[in-house]
Image (tube, rainbow, N blue to C red; front, side, top):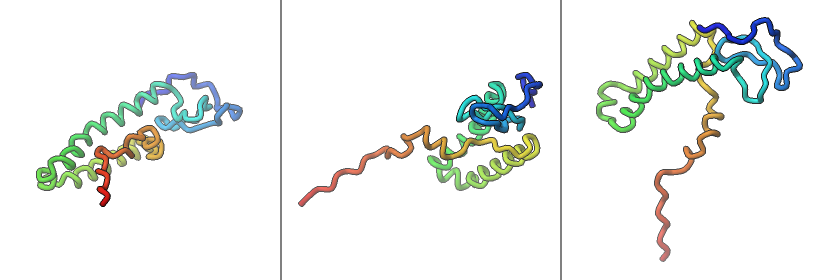
Length: 129
C-alpha cells in the first residue's frame, strides 16, 4: 500500500468544515474539505479507482458472456465464477485493507446514472378501438 503523501503531522481537526472522516483507502482519519470527500489524498482516491477498474475489467467479460452468450455461460457456470471472484475480492479487502469496502454505495452509483431507468425500447402505444 502507498503511504499517505500528505503531511502526516497534521492531526484531525474537529473544526473541519465537513467533519473528520476515515479514508476509504488507508483508514486514517482526516479533516474532510467537501461533503462527499472519502479519501485523505488524491493518490489514495486514484489507487481506489484503479483497484475498482482492475476488478471491474475482470468481471465485465464474465457479465457480458452471462447476458449475451447464455449457452456458453451456462456450460461454464459463469455466475458461479462471478460469485467466487467477488468472494476473493472481499477476502483481499479484509486481508489487505482492514476490511474497508472496495466499492462505492449503490445509491451514489444509481444517482449518477439516471439513464439506467430509461428503457432502451419504448412500448408501442395501445390501439384504441
